[in-house]
Amino acid sequence: MASKFHALMYPWFASGHITPFLHLANKLGEKGHRVTFLLPKKALKQFEHLNLYPHHIVFRTVTVPHVDGLPLGVETASDIPISSTNLLASAMDLTRPQVEDVVRALEPDLIFFDFAHWIPEVAREFGAKSVDYLLLSAAAVATLIVPGGCEFGVAPPGYPSSKVLLHQKDVYSMKPVANSTEDFAALQERFTASITKCDVILIKACKELEGEFCNYVERKFEKKILFTGPMLPQADTTIPLEAQWSNWLGGFESGSVVFCAFGSQTIMEKDQFQELCLGMELTGLPFLVAVKPPRGTSTIQEALPEGFEERVNGRGVVWGGWVQQPLILSHPSVGCFVSHCGQGSMWESLVSDCQIVLVPQIAEQVINARFMSEELEVSVEVAREETGWFSKESLRDAIESVMNRDSELGNRVRKNHTKWRKTITSPGLMNGYVDDLIESFKDLIVHETNHD
Ligand SMILES: O=c1ccn([C@@H]2O[C@H](COP(=O)(O)OP(=O)(O)O[C@H]3OC[C@@H](O)[C@H](O)[C@H]3O)[C@@H](O)[C@H]2O)c(=O)[nH]1
Picture 1 (cartoon, rainbow, N blue to C red):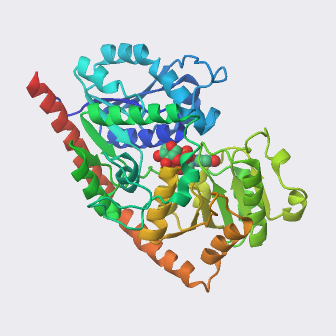
Picture 2 (spheres, helix red, strand yellow):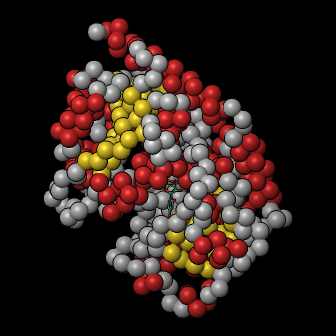
Picture 3 (cartoon, helix red, strand yellow):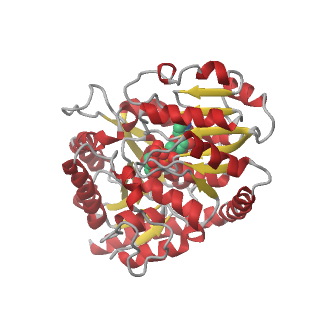
């Protein structure tokens, strides 16, 4: 084969997926490989600035057909509650003819996907290889995806940890991903089909960090598994933090501000959102919360607790829109990150200097949070009641436990975090993974040619 390959990427229609696929595309583009990146029309504007190698990475758009049950014009998961995932996935399935046209015309060597479980069939038909890119930690794959999975609180034989498990009390985190048990089953089938039919599974995990989980996953799947290593984005120094935030944050002492964000999909219940606000208020610290308006409301303002804005005026902001999370995390005034521990945020928190407090929302994030808090001991997870509810006091206590300079727990997580940050950002580690990955992809393509 030619020394450079051509990859087509077709990620799930969600920022938490399009963004990390683009990070991988940039790594391939940097080494001179070609990438055609397929995404919904509306998403193009939001993501095209992440393309650092426009000579090598070319966007193509698909039209997302309407399906009953979704509002008109929906193209990405940010437009819908996470419980409607299965409906948007059905819309993605309807784009198959458009994707086939692109594959037929461009004849890529590799096709990367995650939700479009029919990609392996398309790839096979047109002589490409399919790569199921799992945007999950190795711990989450080990618990939720490997055949047989894990029961509540029970580590299966060979499972590497007695700490990174889901328990009965985590049942709250199983609810939001689907509207019904049928929808949930359909999603599971989608992931099983993807894993079973693809040529190779690529996991966004790093052996230095999750070694035992990576080994376990490799033993459990009967197919080739590749790991991306620390797939950290290249810093884009051309786009600064928006002035409204850099000015506001600049008014506070170094390391004093608590920043809270729950990713691109979380929509909280109104009462839990209000409790979050009150917990922030109780800390007495400056804070910036950037979350979507809670369920049943259209603006943050209408959902705030009574008298809240007046009480926190000058030191606290709750914002209902998108902010530049990585830039906020690297602002010197920000000292604590309260996160839902989605996979992207997990890595961004690890490479930041911030103390980490975790409030996971769905099962995958619970596993990430437990891995971070119990196994690596780099963070603190906010305590929840049996019902899944977290109180303002438990949020305040978790934040205080890491922000108080005299706290033994705070010092322990800071020390461990510093150690792991050095490991995952050590010179050459990421580049070494990328070079190895590229060799593996080339082998895969050559293997195909030999079969012809
Ligand atoms: O206001 C915001 C919110 C989020 N973000 C960015 O959006 C990304 C969110 O990704 P996360 O993976 O953390 O969280 P999401 O909930 O959006 O993703 C979801 O789908 C992908 C899965 O792997 C995640 O685990 C899952 O939670 C992060 O890169 C974060 O920096 C912003 O830049 N601004």
